Image 1 (cartoon, rainbow, N blue to C red):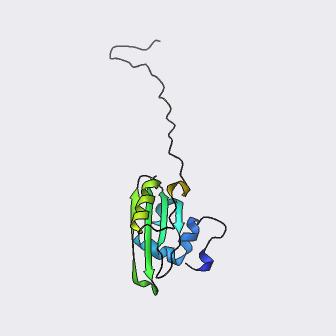
Image 2 (spheres, one colour):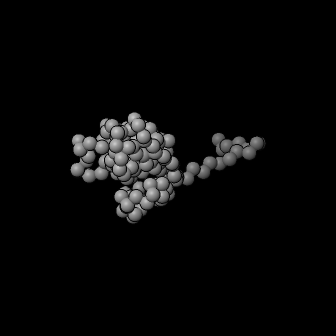
Image 3 (tube, one colour):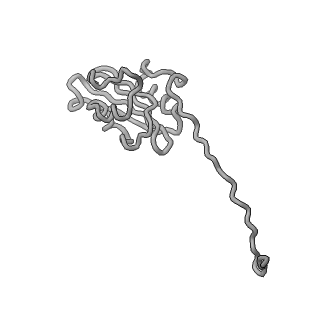
Length: 140
């Protein structure tokens, strides 16, 4: 990834990844698309003929995608590859990425990765209704 694509202000944004040529190439190895991504949980730039591009994202459906991809010194057109998966939790995505990348030391422990709060559902009880049985008549 070129210097103009790095984000010195903080974590990578989805817009920055979508605009970066290397991330666009890396995403060719993903089973999810940029449009499927709700939020970036972890992103680490790679280098040609060096460490892979690494990514963990929260998907719009609530699951978590993980991707690692890389290329040789000549870029993405010659020798390149990658793999991705989808998991129910960020912990599972992190564990897969850590193992798939041969224990890349750039992947922090799960406690250091941005955690996504658990999904909570607010379910309101249905109002009670009087059930009419055949032959019953409501009061007039």
